[in-house]
Every structure is written in structure tokens, then in C-alpha cells.
Amino acid sequence: MSEELFPRPVAEIAPGAVHLPGRLDLDAQRRLLDACRAWARPPAGLRTVRMPSGGEMSVRSVGLGRHWFPYGYARTVVDGDGAPVKPFPDWLGELAAQSVEAAFGEPGPAAPYDIALINFYAGGARMGQHRDSDERSEAPVVSFSLGDSCVFRFGNTETRGRPWTDVELRSGDLFVFGGPSRLAYHGVPRTLPGTAPPALGLTGRLNITLRVSGLAD
Image 1 (cartoon, one colour):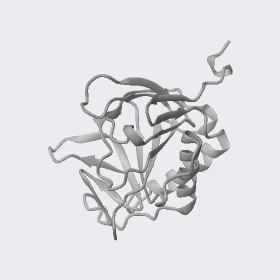
Image 2: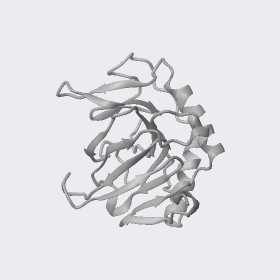
Image 3: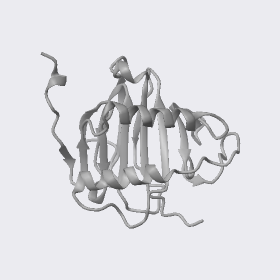
């Protein structure tokens, strides 16, 4: 009997960090995937991020609302083709607010969600332990997974090392972290190739993170 026949419960991984399995059904996943494919096209499309040290991240990324680069935000792709960043759609902000309410049982932040970072993990891609600390807002981070499952490592606010908790994120899963866990270190030590739902039509993994920038124009 397949484990998929058994529901996975909502779980609080750490104070203020909640995993909501299967939040997006297949139709909703397809709609979000279609949107990601449109956002990934140039100009201001999917690109490889080069770190100040000269190394390259193994994921490829695209931003909405503001362009993320190490370690800040801009209105244009300052480390790429220089094009203006694609706008952040209202429906994505509404999805973020609904996700916060689903996770914590209370309305989302007063300030609207206004930025997204979309990372594509091809086979072998990973993400080292890091904190989402370039924003000027303490609003929760909302994260959706599409495609291949991954091991998501959620740590602590003090160090990249232990203690941490490894969580398997599957296609359609939602993870929200805020409050005392807003600046927790987290990463993806590995993906699980070939685990995407066949009906989705995606090879690899997409992670869509939605945030409130807190940045003034």
C-alpha cells in the first residue's frame, strides 16, 4: 500500500514554522507552474546567480516585484540583463495572505506581500544554509514547492549548524515561517529526482517564496 494513501498532518516544525502538506491540488499546481514558466522567460528571466566570491549557485532564479541579488534588492536585474523586474501580481499576494492565515489561524500582515523569489532545482542542485534577511519586514515567509520532492533543512536562528529538522517537501506543499523562526537558517541539502507527479509535467523542482519587502520606493 502506498504511503500516498495516508494524509500527512500539518506540523509545527519550530515555533512560528509550519508545514502544510498538499496545500495546492494538482490544478492549482499546474496554474502556478504555467505562471512560473512565463516569468522565467527573458527579459528579466531565469538566471544563474553568481556570488561575490565568484562561485555560482546551483539553482537558477527569477524575481518578481524586486530583483534579488547577493545581498540586496533592485528594480532591475543588476547582475544580469539589466531589464526591469517583472511585476508581482495581486493574486500571488492574496495567495500569500491566505497561506499565513491557514498556517497560524489569523490574518496575514497588514503590509501586502510584494516580492517573490522563484528557484529552479535541476538534478543535483542544492541550497546551502542561509537566512532570508535582506528584507526590511518581519512578515512570515511563504514557500510553495512544485515538482520533485526535496529534503528541506530547517535550523535555528543562531548558527548554520545543529539543531535542525529535516522535512520532506513534496509537490503542492506549503511551508510558512515567521515570528521567532523568521530568521532561522534553512536550506535544501538534496532533491529527490523523479518524484514529481507525472501529471504535472515538470522535471526538477520549483520553489516559490513570497515575502513582504518592507522597502520604500
